Structures are given as structure tokens and as C-alpha cells.
Image (cartoon, rainbow, N blue to C red; front, side):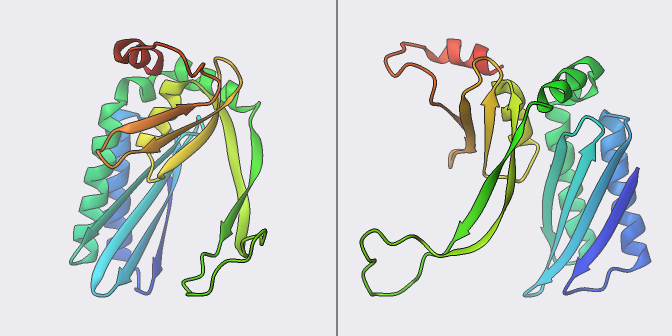
Length: 207
């Protein structure tokens, strides 16, 4: 396992690097036991320490967790605990080599979309009709082909607020997102609006 540890607004010492690397390695190998690469960033902001970790599995799946604390080690503990909670929930699926291979094969048909960050000016002047928003940053967002259950799992294992994917069942674009009540929402533009799908049927499809 290769783990890179960097710092932002704080010096990252050898002791912390060893501590957080061992923490993350222990959690991941406890449930998955596969080759992987990762990155940990320690940040200090207004006296609060924040540890963010990202681990990429050989299958391409990304595991993420974020933790905060009064010191660097407490934030590392919080991030490791959050990561373990997420990994434990899907341990059987993450250990399945066949499931990982199938999902990895489908991702070969994925594509990249442009991802823009636009400015919302905090001013009193009215917006001009037809004016395009000011783009302040742009990048790429990968759109993979997944089943709904795989998309839910990927979102739940990450720190993202939403994810766009191509539904493996019908090829249409879908979105899964985090709801304020702690659940995950699923938007399927291909599903008939008049469908009378009940909750149990939807949960079977998502599972």
C-alpha cells in the first residue's frame, strides 16, 4: 500500500505520517486486504485540525473519509473511524473479486464530462436577462456505467454530495445524492413518471 501524506497550513512530521498511514492501512486491510494507493491531507484552519483521506482500490473504487479534532492525531482517529464505518457496511461486496471485476469492466464504457464552477455574485444589482454565469474554474468529471446499488455504494463510501452515472440497466443518465435526512436520493430520468413503483420494489432494484 502506497500512502502519500501532505499538509496544508501545517507541518506534517514523520510521527504523524506513520500514525495516520498505519491507521488507514489497518482499517482497509481488516476488511478488504487488497493492493491500494492512498493520499492523506492534514489541514489546520482556525485552530481546528482536519484529516482527509482518499484510498483508491485496484478495482478503481475510491474510498474517502474526513475527520476533525483539536490536534492532528485526534483528526486522524476521527477520519479512520469514519472510514471504517463506511467500509464495514459494504465489506462483503468490497471483498468480492468477481463483483469488482464486473464493475471495473463496465467502467471501460464511461466518459468524461466538463465540470464547471460558476460565480454567484453577492451583490444587490439585478442579473441581466440572458447573461451567462461567470465561470471561475473548470475540470472533468468521469461518468461511469454502474448499477444503482453500485452508485449508492460509491457515493456512500465517498465524501461527495452527489454522483452522476450511466444506469447499467438502460444506459440513461442517473443521479444519486445525499439527502438532509441522512438517506441517499436517486433520480432516474428514464423511469416513467406514471410508474407505480412502491418502496419495497424500489429498494429491491437499488439493492
